[in-house]
Length: 125
Image 1 (cartoon, rainbow, N blue to C red):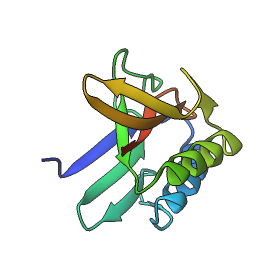
Image 2: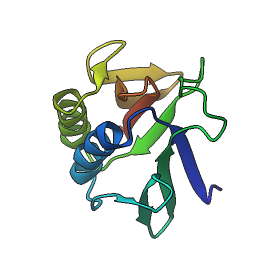
Image 3: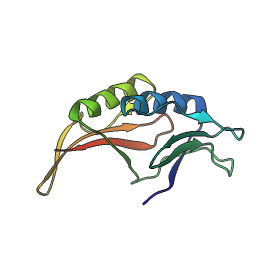
Image 4: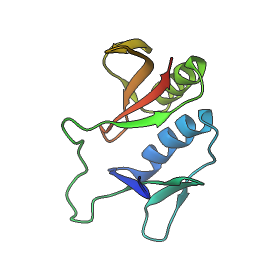
């Protein structure tokens, strides 16, 4: 469905440190900073990037927005969460664990990245 996702960041190096650590847990390599100062992570299924806002205003989180990352196990969700907290992220909501959505159970963890964007790791049970 998506070709790419771009999130705003105020400090590209701080955001790169956070996403390099959390993406390493998911099996992805380090991001690269392009000549415009944006950082990108490329996969076979799409591109994720962080950039200072083009309009020159500070980056801020989208109220009600969450970007979720697929994982392969509950242990990977826990490792993703721990890597994020250790690298500039902030734990939010409940600790990593099972959430019930109707008849579906999901193992989820939520963080705010260094710019305040809400991100999630999810494993369907």
